[in-house]
Each structure stands twice: as C-alpha cells, then as structure tokens.
Amino acid sequence: MLGLLGVLIAFGVCEAVSRAGIVRSSYLPPASEVLSRAVELAGDPAFLDGLGATLRAWALGLALACAIAIPLGLLLGSVPVVDAAVRAIVEFLRPLPSVALIPLVSLLLGSGTETKVALITYASVWPILFNTIYGLGETDPLAKDTLRAFGFGRLSVLLHVELPGTAPFIAAGIRISAAIALVLAVATEILAGFGDGLGIFIAQASTAPDGTRDVLAGVVWAGTLGLLIDGVLVRCERRAFPWTPEHRTLQRRPPKGEAPERRTPQGGTPRQRSRDASAPMPGRHSAADVSDREARP
Amino acid sequence: MLTLDSLGRHYGDHLVLRDISLTVPDGQLLCVVGPSGCGKSTLLRTIAGLLPAHEGTVTVDDTPVSGVPDRLAVVFQDYGRSLFPWLTVRENVALPLRRRGLGRAERRAEAERILERVGLGGVARRHPWQLSGGMQQRVAIARALVCRPALLLMDEPFGSLDAQTREDLEDLLLEVHRTDGATIVFVTHDIDESVYVGDRVVVLSPGPGSRVLLDLPVELPGPRDQIGTRGLPGFVALRAQVGRAVRSGKKELP
Image 1 (cartoon, rainbow over the protein chains, first blue to last red):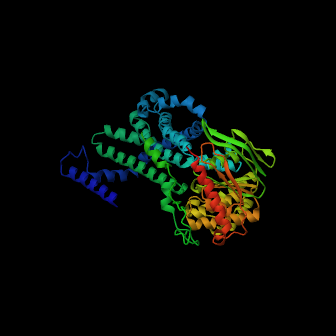
Image 2: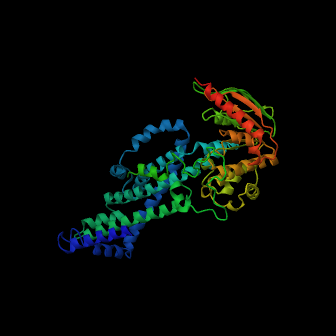
Image 3: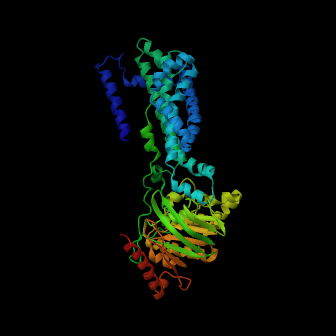
C-alpha cells in the first residue's frame, strides 16, 4: 500500500516538474504523456514484434545458461578435483563485466540474434552456476547420513537429498539471471542499433527529433517487463518450494485433528529434559541469502 | 547378534574410543550412557558403518561389517535435519522402501500402515515441518521401522523433546521392541531413561579414549510403566548404580 503511495507521489512530482516548465518538456515530457504513449505502444504491431524478438532472445539465452550452469555447477559442487581444476578459470571470467564484451561479440558474430543470445547466456551463467555450487555445499550432512544409513549409494544421495535441497538455490539463481538477461538483451540491442527489439526501439527513438517521450515509454516497458518477470518467478519459487525456511512461516498451520503438543510437564521428574525442539535449523542459509550476495549484473 | 571387538577410533591424534568390546544378543535393547562428548555418537556411527573403525571390528551376525550393514535403521536426535522437508510425511516414511523394489502403491500402503502404528494416521500428507517436535520424531521412528530392521540404532532420539512427549515416545519404543524384537542400541545421556527403557545399560567413560566403565543388566519386571516402574526399589538402585558410574568416570579426569 505504502509502495503504491510512493509510486503515485513520484509520478505526481514528474508530472508537476514538467507541466510547471521547470524543465523543458522535450527533455522531460510529463509522466502522463509517457505513460499514455507506453500504453499506446501495446497496440503497435511493429513495437510488439520488437518486444517479441527481445523476449525470444531473453528466453533462449536464459535457457541455454540453465543448460550449461546447472550440470556444470552440480559437477563442480560434487567433484572436488574438477572444482580445483576449473576454479581459476571461473574466477578470472566472472568479474568481467558482460556489457564490455558487447563490441567484441558483435565483431565475431555480427549484430543479429546470435550475438544477443551469446551475451545473455554468458552473463546469466554465473549466478546460476554459483548458486548451484553453493546450494550443494549447504546440503545437510545429517540428511546425507540418514539416507546412507538406509543403505542408499552415492547416486541416490545426489538424487534424493542433494538435488532437492539445492533446487531452491538454483531457482533463486535463475531469478537473478532473468533480470541480468533482460539488461543484456536491451543493452546489446541499443549498442547494435538496428534490427528488431525493445532496445532498438529505444535507440532509434533517441535519434529522432523530440524522441524523449518514446525513449521513456520504451524504458517504462523494459522496467515493467523486469518487474513482471521477477514477480512471476518469486511466485513460482513459493509454490515449488514451500518447505524452505523463508517460505515456511507463510505456510505453517496448526495440525488438524491432533492434540497440540503438551508443553508443560505434569508431575514429571525434575530432570533437565526440555529443550526447544521447534527452533529453526541453526546455521542454515536460505537461498535468498546467497542470491543477494551473488546479485551483480 | 552384534559384536564389537576391541573397537577403537580417533580423529587425527585425538583418541575418541578405546578398546570397546561388547556382545549384544539378538533382540536386546542396549542403552549406552555417558557424559556428552564421550564418543557415544561416534560409537553409533561406527556401528552403522557411516564411519570406519580404526581398530578392532564390528560384526553383525558373524559377518564383519565394512560399510552400512543390511537391515539397519538409524534414528538421529535432530529430526528437523534428518527428515526431508520437501517430502510429505508419507513420502519420508516410504523412502527406505525404494531399496526393496516395492511398487509405488505398496510403498504407500506400507508407510500408512506404519504411521498408523506410531499414532500418526491423520498426518500422512502433511510435511514434517508442519508438525510438532514429538510428532516429527514419531515420523523418524516410523521411517526407521518401515523396513523391519534387524538392528535399530538410536542416537539420543528423545534428547530435544519435552518431558511428557519424551515419556510417550519411550513407551512407544518399548512397545515396538516387544512386538518387533529388533536389536536396539539406544544412546542417551539421561540415566533415568537408560534404566527405564534398557534391558542392559553400558556406561562409557568421558573422552578422550572412552571405554566401557560399567556393563549392567537391567532386571526389572515388564511391562514397564512410567510411574510404577520408576518407583520400584530395583529401579532406584539401578539408577543410583549407573549414576555413580557416570560420576566416577568424571572424577578420573586429571
């Protein structure tokens, strides 16, 4: 509710600043005009085609990143030898800002979809990869021992304990990568300057006379898209992993048809017995913790 | 029959267990008592084949154990970590049956039967973390029983439960032991509990290098009863004897 109020105030200020003539309206068109232009664009087939092209590249790049990063992460996370061998390369490549690679990749692959997809994939691999490795490392040794004690082998432990336990971390990594992928998709298009896409629309509007309104309308679309994607993914995570510590609080209900656990010992011997058993697991990180750490476009 | 022959284990230079020899006949409920840090859990994990023995051998039914023995089940104290939160109660309980090549429907039916038995008939489709601590430990016990283990190892299973829940679960364990007849090794730091549930109590000395201080048969009339049994002179005497052994071990320390 308060968030909505903030948006309304920001909107009002932008509108007022422009209407009052403090800033020339060709620099900053009134917010209402930008918004109505953004809505108008929803009915423009050429714009929608571009949007479709951007989203296709986004989806393809993200899917490729998942296909690379998840198996690689599982391999690095469970075979220490491979991890040691590859770690140096990974640590060298990771800090490279992906946006800086746009000219190089454009040079090699041209300015078509391949370039976009390649860059999106490259940038999106890292959060997924690191979240996968981290999630595997967080697997509870007691959970693994439990399964081993029932006579299960290494592969079963991976399948029944490590994979399900790591899945929320992977999902959080994908969510971070989804945002990064959108940044790369639009940025690549803007720098390439021709073809189809949301970034192309913004780039071309910026060279047109009085194009500020269109540029801002394009930006509104990009922002909305990012927000929408994030919202959808957060919902998916909540549905798929209701058991993670950060989602549990939303789900916990008192057991039906069962007497609540007796908490007061009646006539019990004065031995030291009760320790709080329902306390959350100590020392376990939630998937969200890592995602914050790894989130850097 | 479970046999430990001069079992020893160390972590680096740190000696944890020293020369532990025990023979546990089939169907016995053996309680292992000792102060915390005396290597009780290490002993249990070594029997389970989760840790290798450095000296001596573990033998189950005349077969030396390397790795996890067949028809073994373990219940850990920390049910919150040993139950899988992504599975429902029923799926948790049915999981060990996957190794026995049962079909999905059979696994389900078996899991529900055993849940009914530990008094959790109504919660099969919930998730463990939606249950109270006592109910979660019941789920862990059901999961251990579902494969009809010949050897059941329990590592301070009731250590984090409140007194009342704990008594209920002690009685559940005794009932299970009477009907299933599995050999049970039950580790606890609670002297009363060891005498109440055990057929036999073994006291370990404090570490490093724990060894057996006392090996005591518990001859109390069955079936045991939380109030009646605990009031028997025999119970009080045994408890005192075990208590003295635990204390004397402490004094031995420099």
